[in-house]
Length: 290
Image (tube, rainbow, N blue to C red; front, top):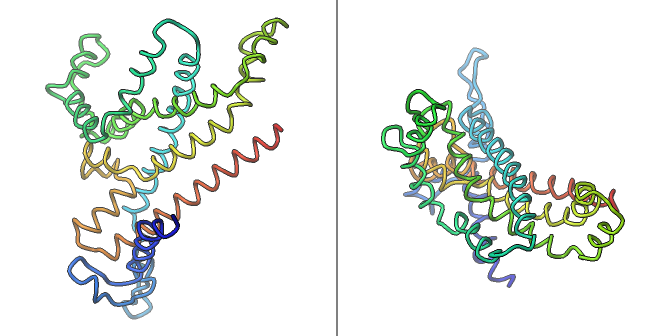
């Protein structure tokens, strides 16, 4: 197992780190020269005491991509956790046709992301989209909105699609936690006359909190490296460009492989830092409750 992981993960990751400290391009990967931290930060002296910093750490487009990624991750994961918890509570109840409903809820998550993005792109089309047509018939808007092209709505459009698609994933993980809650606890609370809302916050939520933390970590990891949804739905849009899209553009589109590798390295470090922080916060909260 360790050998397989080293072959498919560790070695490519190490190569990415290495290329970030070189002047590599797509046509000269084997003859790349070591340049140190030039891709990250470099002071260029113009003479007469004047100069300027260049590199990824002072790149405004990069930092905008970082902000877009963090904003997208926080908002999407928050809403997906909230809606996923509601869906999981509904699916955990006993009612006729529960199996069919469970299968139907998973359909958005089962659809490939690229297919979902293209489907929603047509639905949000400013001239032919059903979304604009529906909102205009309901008199919510007075004229069609270019959801994916306008800087005011591009991020909102991406968030809507992602929340629609990934909420079932969160519901599935949280539902697994709900299945582990002993039924006799609810029976005892019902006999004692405890209000269901109080039972949820005092019994259910503390028990399933570890499952929620795991679901948030998994979803945050996926959201932080989002690429296909952004690339298909809003290509070349500064308002939705994420770190993964930024890295891909420099790796292949702009043929600045070393700069893209440096961006990929920072992406890995940022995701690792955020994941460790979320895990530590969740572990601390669970420990306090225990």
